[in-house]
Amino acid sequence: HVRSRRQRQMCIRDSLKDEKVMANRIDYFYYNWGPYLWSTELDKNIIDKLKFDGEKTKIDYNSTLAGHLDNQFGYDKSTQKWFEKQTKEILSVYRQGHCEYHGLENFEVKYELVDLWINYMKPGDFNPSHTHAEDLSFVIFLDVPKELDKERQDFVGTSTPPGSLCFNYGTQSKPTWARTGVHIVPRDRGMYIFPSLLEHTVVPFKSDVTRISVSGNFRMTNRDTLPDNYY
Image (cartoon, rainbow, N blue to C red; front, side, top):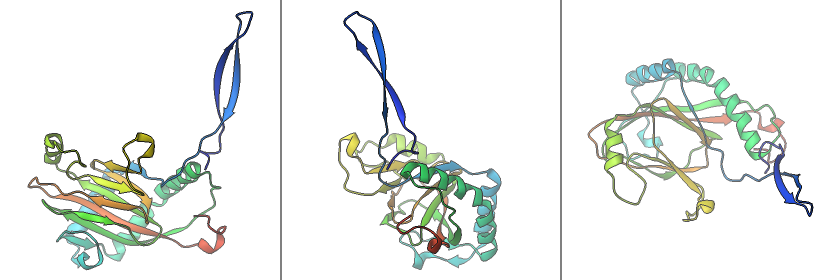
């Protein structure tokens, strides 16, 4: 696919026999493939409400999720409806970037929020490699304790640092050009949106703290109005 369909230009300077220099313009483009992983920072008011409503909910989500966590709870319908409104513009910006990245025409795509839950991650908890249902998924970090920074800095192994969020879409290789995954160090208020079928993992940590995050899924509702194999 072509990055945003815009052609880039590069100048190559050729020396001529009379020692004058001419600049030749070469039009080119380059291809992107692989998933579009997008990140932004949410407003503090959204984070605070998700925390507040998360403390009140008692809807047990453990049996519906892949995570090895004891404290995963679903939000009620009123919070889901509020969150769907808050993220409408965010999804629009995501869609614009997604289309530019893959060289797609930006047709109107409508989404509805299907799931929304809060995770209280404690020492030793983890999420094995898994995917989500629906079309788009996301993770939001509400509270990332500072102790996790020190644990990552003290880590001396060769694998992914403690508490990382990892995305993979193939077998990893050492050459930089052949990398098929990325690991993310969670930050307060960070939101990450990705295709639901993109495999991801959450690495455990040892610090005696609780990290709070929110996850959810969006479903495309107007697929029948879009070209075949559009998304």
